[in-house]
Length: 119
Image (cartoon, rainbow, N blue to C red; front, side, top):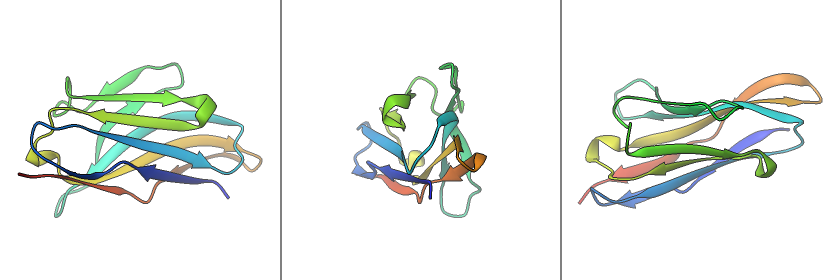
């Protein structure tokens, strides 16, 4: 069974940094587009950043210039470097990834990791 596992969340002061990691567990043949989403209390889940297989990236306007998404296909992983964090970045962050396994093409979500920005 293929799963996505996130790590790296926590409590940080405004202006601080965190690095989120997301790794596929299980046997997969290839990884497609990957993305980070977040959901704050009382709000809908929103796209934060995404990265295609060819490395093309796209960011929400609210995080441009502060967050950087990257991937390492050899490690079956994706990362989100978050700098200059603001209280409004507080949310549960989820990783989403497309992949191909012996069962064909599919996509999955991680369990989420809490990011809290507060003094």
